[in-house]
Amino acid sequence: MFDEYLKKLTELRQRNVPFAIATVVRREAPSSGKTGDHALIEQNGNLWGWIGGGCTKGIMLKEAGEAIQQGQPRLVRISPNPDDISPEGIKDYKMTCQSGGSVDVYIEPVMPKPQLIIMGKTAIAQALAQLGKILDYKVTVMAMNADSELFPTADEIKITFNLAKVPLTAKRFVVVATQGEQDEIALKAALKEEHGYVALVASRKKKEAVFDYLRLSGIADDVLAKVKTPAGIDIQAKTPAEVAISILAEIIQYQHTQPLIEQFEPLTDDTESKFYINPVCGIPVDKTAPKHVINYKGQNVYFCCDGCKIKFEQEPEKYVTA
Image (cartoon, rainbow, N blue to C red; front, side, top):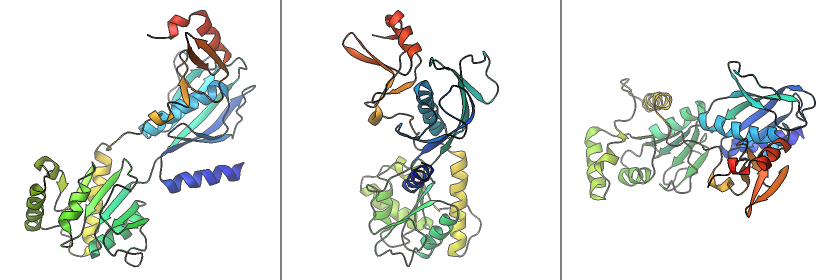
């Protein structure tokens, strides 16, 4: 089981997708989750491993989704008699399963590596790829005739300027370092997608020529205004490596001060058919393995525990909106 857990963890890291690690750190019998149990929870709600069933699983899906969305870990306690005022740093939930017991689960989000997309195969582009890898970015290079000899540390190499087939993460940074080789085509391709940071390595004179061409191609001035050029922080850089350092310094500054392009959602539309929000406790229930199902006015209502089912049967109108 542990080998399968590690295999899945490695797979998710290689795919560079967000997920959360949930670990049981404390348990009081008869909770089914035991200290040391752990699970991987994907953004779409898929769970690999074991941290408990019933309402525990549903709560973990909800909290893992929020941890991924916010990029922050959390400690979750599920107990029969939660405190009216939760201790600092602990999110309290009531154990509604009749089996009882309590469990504390630490949830840690694992976020995708920031993504550095480099367009061009110039000396600056090569230096960016090397230094970006040292800083643990996922490095994608795009340039005609680019290969692993020029970019031995790159995660992937594309020979065309096309972002359509590149999985994009929220933390992505695009640097056009073509320097005279299809500058306009590369920058136009970069601007087809929304990015937090797009930089063009060019002199001011070259920048104006490229921008004039793109305006004639239909690119609006407000879009062009988002392009950072000259690229990088002014550190009086002279060599390709120094220029690359100045660009990465600017990216690091941007990464820690600006909002992401998009937020990760705990449950997406793709998972809507798999999970149902329990109307009593608000916890997602896996439709393939609910504790109870009630048909109410022609629609199935799914429950994670006996307590929620009983409450719903007593006052169904209270929990079902129009």
